[in-house]
Length: 100
Image (cartoon, rainbow, N blue to C red; front, side, top):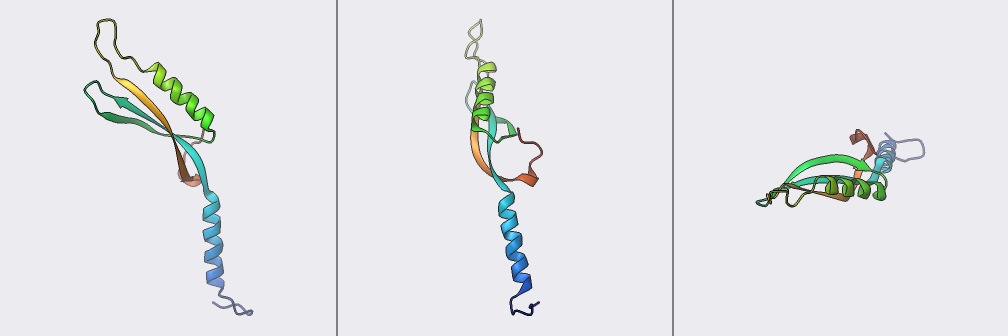
């Protein structure tokens, strides 16, 4: 459809929609928690916590890894360890259930 001024209205609407979509994308920090097994190998345990602030993400990553990490127990057996990382991500805000 062409407006009286000679511009394509459909193209203008599409460009406005693209600009709006770019505005909905935000930078967040994803807390990823991995279980490190004694024999080697990692298993992803949690990958669904998003934080706006890097310091908050690092705080929880530190707390999780310190709380659940134990190299050797009393009898000398090696237990599972936990590693947590904060990864920067560009995410569409509508796709996220909760941002901490």
